[in-house]
Structure formats: C-alpha cells, structure tokens
Amino acid sequence: MKTRSEELQVFVAVIDCGSISAAAEQMGQTPSAVSRTLSRLEGKLGTTLVNRTTRRMDLTEEGRFFLERARLILEQMDEMEERLSMNRQTPTGRLRINAAAPFMLHAILPWIGEFRRQYPGIELELNTDDLIIDLLEQSTDVAIRIGELADSSLHARSLGCSPVQVLASPAYLEQHGTPQRVEDLAKHCLLGFSQPESLNHWPLRHAQGDRWSIRPSLIASSGETLRQLALAGEGIVSLSHFMTHEDIRTGRLQVLLSEANNGYRQPIHAVYYRNTQLALRIQCFLDFIQRKLAMYAS
Image 1 (cartoon, rainbow, N blue to C red):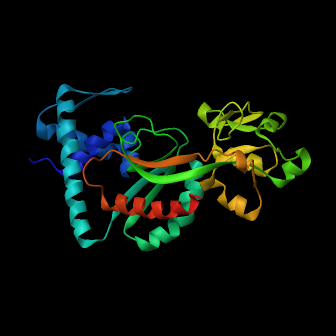
Image 2 (cartoon, helix red, strand yellow; image 1 turned 90 degrees about the vertical axis):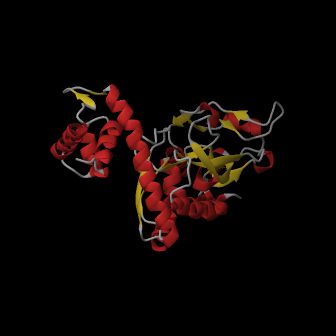
Image 3 (cartoon, rainbow, N blue to C red; image 1 turned 180 degrees about the horizontal axis):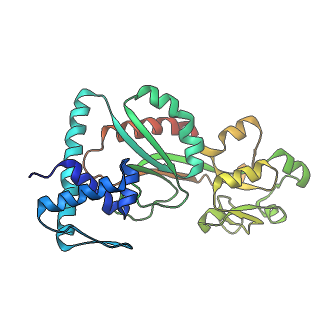
C-alpha cells in the first residue's frame, strides 16, 4: 500500500508537537485516530518510526531518515499548491502569526478587519508571546520580532523601524515636574524592562554618550504593562512609537527630552523558515503590514 500525504502530516505533527495528544489537538483529531494513523504508516513501511512509552517518544534511526524525507515531500506539496494558488492570484490557507503582545495589540489587530476583507481566503491564527519562540515547535508560519536581530538560521525580512521615545502622562508631570535635562531623570520614577537589559538603555544623548542607562524604580517584562503603568501616572517610560502613537496623538502621553533623543529607531523584522519562494498568503500579509507600519515610522 502507498503512503498518503495525510499520514506524513500526522507523523510530522507528532514529532513536532512531542506527543500524540498534542498532535491530535493541533490537527483537530482524537489521540486514538492519530495513534492509528501512525501505526498504519509504520505497518505500510514495515518498520518502527517512533519508540513510544508512557513518558516519552524517541525517533528510531529509520524514523529520523523518514522524517527528513517527509518534511521535504510536504514542503514540495505545499509549494506546488501555492504556485497554483499564485497563478490564480487567490491566496488561501491558514496563516499562523506570532508576535509580542504589544505589537499584536497596537500594530496588527487594528488592521485585521481590513486584511480579512482584502484576503477572505486566508484563515488567520494570531498568537502572542513576549519571548522568542521556536517557529517549528509552535507551528508558526511567520513571527514578528522587534529590536536587533540575533544571528539565526531563520530567514528575515525587514518591515521597517519605529522611533523610541521617552514619555510620561500629564498627571505624572503635574505631580512630579517635567525633566528639562537628561540628568534630571535620576530624580524621577523610571519604568523599565526586566529583560532584555538593553531596553533600559534609553536613546538619549548626554555628556558621557548617546545612551542613558537607567535604574528602574519599577520593572515589567512586557512593554504593554509598562505602557499601562505610564498611562496610570506611575512614572516615565521609554517605548516604541508603534505602541504609543495614539497615546501621543490624544495627549494621554507626552514626549519628553525630544531635543536629546539620539534618533534611534527600533528595527522590526518578520522571520520565517522557508528559503524557497514565500507562500502567497505570507507574502500578502507581509506586504500589507509593511504598508501599515510606515505610518509609525515618524
């Protein structure tokens, strides 16, 4: 009997997800159905692909060989379908996007309605994570990463950049005064990141250099948490324009020390695994969001 593509998809999903139950949840099947498919595949091949115990799953030597070929076959099938779709100019299929919560909230969600109307055949799955994820493990097509991009085997596309500004609410400034010089910040409550530490080096020129290292009075892991604290009048913060532009426009936050700002712009990249021609649905999304991000570039 010949192996079917559905069986290859199940096998790859089990390995990527780490368990039959996790693969079943991802694929919308029952664990027993996934287990039967995996057993049927092994029966057709006449070999054991995965050693299964109650606690773990390990690929056999044959399984490692077969996994590499299965991935290649599925990728070639996807590419063939995508080429046909591109010829029809109707992007379709599920698109899994991952981004940090602030970027998802302020730079993607406001445009989702317009994107869906423009590309009704694309089924979106939006996931947030403030930490760097494994795209393969999380079954993610494209992830948006903010800041300098570390060396990686991933492919990247620049989507633009966003200015970083020092901000505070009118209520905070009324109570504590407005800093006139960079050095005045030492007298204020500063809101900073718990990680990475580089985000606590604010883009401000001063006598000793062009970055001002702060000692935060209050720290958080998420930029959105810091934004909410700043809006509540809890201190001064340094955040990217893509998540604060509306606050600045409406006066909820005020830009401070603009004359000392060194002009740093935070890079924004889309990262993905595929090194062949991008799937049309991914290409359409990246082109779309890049046009929208141009609005936050100043």
